[in-house]
Image (cartoon, rainbow, N blue to C red):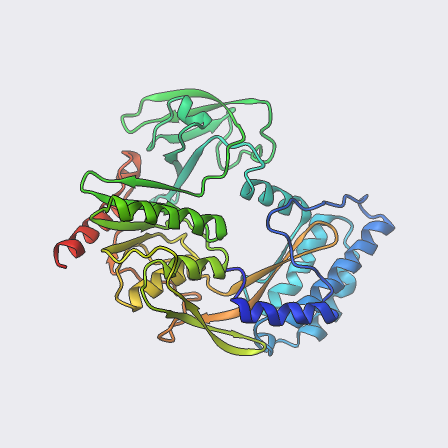
Length: 416
């Protein structure tokens, strides 16, 4: 979750104008990474500047005024000299995160500039992609991790090369996919992928990554007339896309709607409230947010387009943050059914700040409870219908989670 609603953001921005040492990060631009010689006076001076700005920002914005029982200011002062003395970016950020780890909050952390640039390039589709999504499975008996093709995006390199869902990735240029270090530098080079399929047949494909426009979501209809809307984030463009799809559904009405939020890591609270409002004809409280300024409710108001028909949600263990708020609200309000795995349990509202060296500071700024007072952090949303795909399902490209969500939606439709 990013942003905890209009009221909170206005309050925090007012504070920032007075004394805040760090600006909010622009989510739609790439960071300017500052490269400094290892061990140089400039490197150490930047360490000090970043460290002090991080500590001040955490003191001003962390959601728990007791800092989870830690004397954060005193502990940060004790650790400052060691962190500032680190000779390079990697060691400095390791020491900086050692200080932040005292808060025992997995949302509050610093991202080093090189990683921040890579992450932003991926999110903004400014980095080439092979055009496939992965499913990772760990064997219960051996502990071995295997990676399968989960979805192939039309128009991508994998699609054009005939790569199929369910194929296992064996190697890339002779190295295992997990160990391959070329994900941040894919321009202008073809990579040799080796796969095998469910029958054990080997497939070799030469894939050259390419830039592709951002995929806001996919809309498909099943043979049974169910509209499946899959989306991977909560932001204004995604909310616009979803409203357009729902408007189309008013003129060519499906029997039911399934929201596929598997792997959706969340996003902006304001956009989430818009999306939730698309499924309620009256305002609804989606939860309560606690910050250092107190507690207030977050509400969703009816959207521009409202789907009032049968509804189910399919989620996975990688569904997090605003995705979990969506599932919890639909579930608590009795608006539909949740299918799949227990969600990730990561629902502290996190705000991103820009660090002067191009790094990123993430701070847990507010704690969330559902409208009924349930704490989702560390617990997640338990589905009404539990479905866990098997190794064999993934190997053969089957999707039992989505199948179960479609059946549940049709069951709701039949009983209306």
